[in-house]
Length: 407
Image (tube, rainbow, N blue to C red; front, side):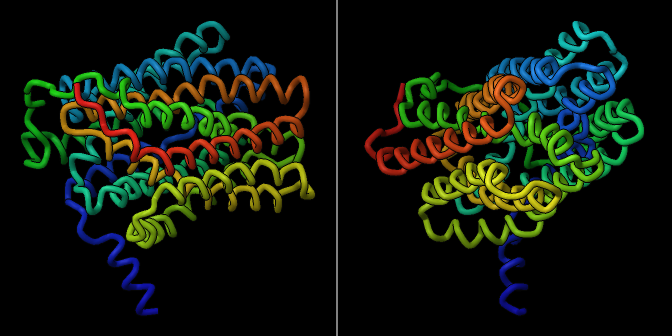
């Protein structure tokens, strides 16, 4: 018991106060994350859309997120991570409120794009903030702490969102909007440059000696491409898999919410001590490969084991293990190739990679499910995930051969 207590104490020690405040901001923001996970169910259940049309809306969200990610990265390098986070939270919250009042398909598509562009510009700024408030010794744990906040919020929001969705989908938009705005207010109170010395007063303007080098960084561009493929697989968790659980496993919305909550709870309990243990082994690319293989396996088991709530939980346990092993160290990889002048650019491309996946993944997943069935979809996703593992393994072996380019 003493060893376990010491493990948890060491896992959480040595992180800056600003990092803890930033994680609290993220926790409040993500506690209201209810619209996107239940968007396909909202569109198919409340508005009578087909799974293909609902998936198209999610793809439009992804297109907006691509634009927001790239733009957010550029704005972060120019205006600083604090300013971009504050504006993105306020504007994104307002757009959630607007989206909940729309009921025509074209209007929903247009508003979804605007919402995604505004809301997702937050992510590269937030990733840059984590790097700023951390150091090389604890950076992976800081990203894990940020993920812990995301997943605690996801656990709460997913469980509550599933319950609320059983009664009134429209309330999801109000909660998501006001938690965004609440997070912005807290950010203003605790991390504004005037109130917290750890936040720079303004982005220092200096000559950028490595301008635009992310595009010339061969391992990073390979990493970005493989991340897109992995994201295509991963986003099925929020787009087609909830509908699969409802249509094939006959689960109720609150049961689907509980499986989402399970993912967040396990990450909250396990990830930080796990990362503390693994990061001392200095071989993080192997963990990425192993984690991606587990994620791929979580989809394939849906075809080989008897269906129902038990299988939904089993698949969630497998994908959670894979997520914990892979995603924190993916942040370690991209930050290791940056400096203070171009970190927003790298973060923007990393965010855009996930957003491209959000364009392709839900739409193609919905099309495959509708025309060829879920069995075909899960085999395709599983095989694609294994190809991603091979790509990350290539990076593990070959990255050292490519020095970081200097402009």
